[in-house]
Image 1: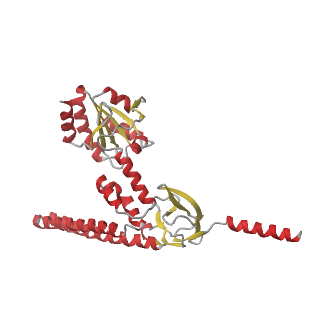
Image 2: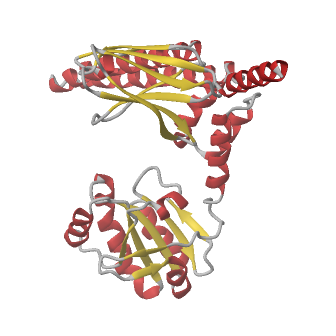
Length: 361
């Protein structure tokens, strides 16, 4: 009987040990941080998820994270303050030290991965510092009407920009087997034409969650190339009516889906251009659906009234259409024919009326 009890006890202890997950600590030391709540976040599918929290006492707090994929990025966020401090941990203890009132000067002593990423961005910052210094010198030369010096300094800035581009290109090639290079390209993927992005990711010879992100982005962007069919949506107008894109397309020879916002200066500059094109070509079968990404409905309504936009305006507050059309920058637009096939995109200024004149002649 005693043997059975001992065996059961040993089994229970073993099961308890198996259930206990490995963890690592995030040690926080922030001056002026007493009584502030800090959150430890990890990024899941690019979204921050809170996994622990603590109140700073005696300028100290300790948070705990379960051991996970070393490619996962974490962040420390202070309750009520904008932004967060991101880092890679390599599943090892992390120390975050500084002053809560000076987040830019907070030091994150984390992993070898983070140290490598810091080294990359420190080098990038050096290029930006050189460009900023050169621009200050150029502005002074302009004030002194020394235009020869201005031209010379312009060339210097272009040279630094080329150095920066070459540094990034070389880094991505030399670190193709390191997920940090994948992470960097994932952050910057919106800045590359699709064909260049495909070439870069094709050189990555290992797998990573960031490489997967880039390939997913490429797949979605290919869906938005000229020649592809429209992606339907239904949104509300400024007077409460529903607009379904497929219905608009079916009734018109050409339909422009125009993404903009009240707070976007370039968008407001383009609104008169789109309005003029609408007034010129509407009777020939041209329609516009303005899609605002505003969160402030009052600001959106005021902008529509101020710019006197005569075509349908819908509010994409939840980001349904913006997400479907991969809108990262505005203004952005897509032109579809009556069959729903994209015939052009990114038409700005005179290019819009020129394209309409070509297709509606």
